[in-house]
Image 1 (cartoon, helix red, strand yellow):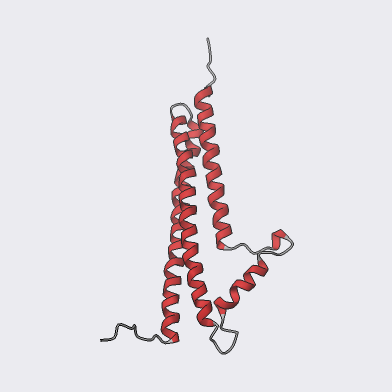
Image 2: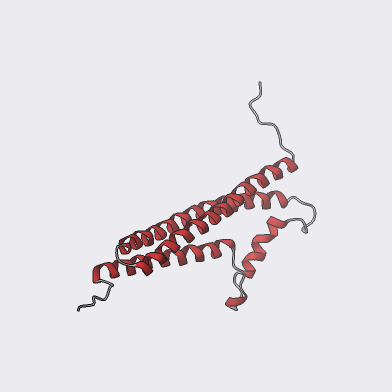
Length: 166
């Protein structure tokens, strides 16, 4: 009995690599969408606690730190998803390299074309990758969380209500 796996056709290998790519690309988008919803709710609560003040200042500090932690965690999850997607892209590019003509070598040609676009000399004309855009959002929400937590703690420790003495 042979333990050698059956030989796969190029189409079967491409289908396998495509399914792997598709699973992780969809997972990445789903994670980012979930992050947007979750961080929006936390940021809204943080904003409300900063306006209400009083007893809500400690809640605001907690929500701010939570937003920063959530941003960091989703950034790390996105790094993993991005790694898996690049892994699939490399496999697709290697398989496409055997194509007899260069036009359909989409994954093979994409890395070179993207590298050229993301390094344009004029920054506003540069192409942003999904990773860069996602990192910007994770960073912005993390900063909002830290600033919100800091403001909430400052208001809590230094008093926020102007005492009216009669």
